[in-house]
Length: 118
Image 1 (cartoon, rainbow, N blue to C red):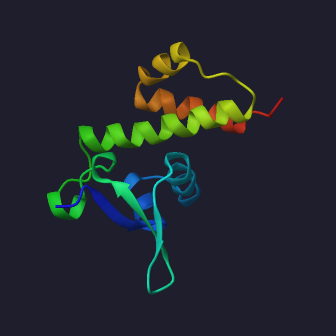
Image 2: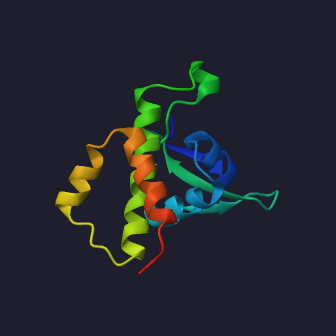
């Protein structure tokens, strides 16, 4: 059994519950291998432990593992947004962000994304 899943960017975004652009940035940030299928569509090799359970194969759309994976993506995007604004994301801030409840983390991301850059 392979420890990587081969997905299109659209499939990856859907599986993670994120936007397509966020999926592309996540793949780029992690440096995952990219393949082009015979249909011309790009596919990525995603480590299986990074993905939430597949709802089609497990019968559940939510759960602790899926929520954890989504929160990890939101956290990565938030850190990127802060860095793009020139903010340092040191270990103390990173640890504090991990402790936030999912809704607070999303609210913070929206606030950072909507505030004007310095």
